[in-house]
Length: 167
Image (cartoon, rainbow, N blue to C red; front, side, top):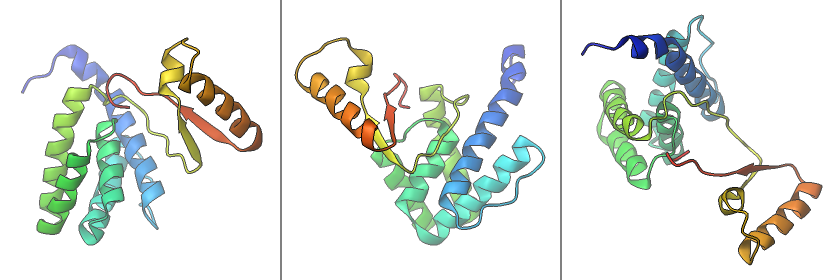
């Protein structure tokens, strides 16, 4: 498959974004993440290999979810996670890597999300999508705004809203 000059020009940016996402996932999910590699592609590869080994060894749905989220740059559907957990049960690490990359590619094409960064949050995350997208001030929107003000005054919170492409 031949790439256009625009695609070739974006390749370093996309490789850096993928490396950042996989590094964040490995640092969050693994007891010991691989040492950083000097270039983004090598670092992404070592992080992906470590995440796949963990998924193959444990079949942990949270590792499947985080790994595919890191590869795609968008949230997977529950059936994507179930598919990967099942694949982890049936396949060795090499075949699991191919299965994971095939599934991730299909999702990434649909979501156009390869250039997104990934930030792992360990604190309270509050979904305020409706309030963030609408100036409507009635019912649940008003309640959400008031509760967020109270929570934010007492605890650190991260407010989030959804994009049109699942992330």
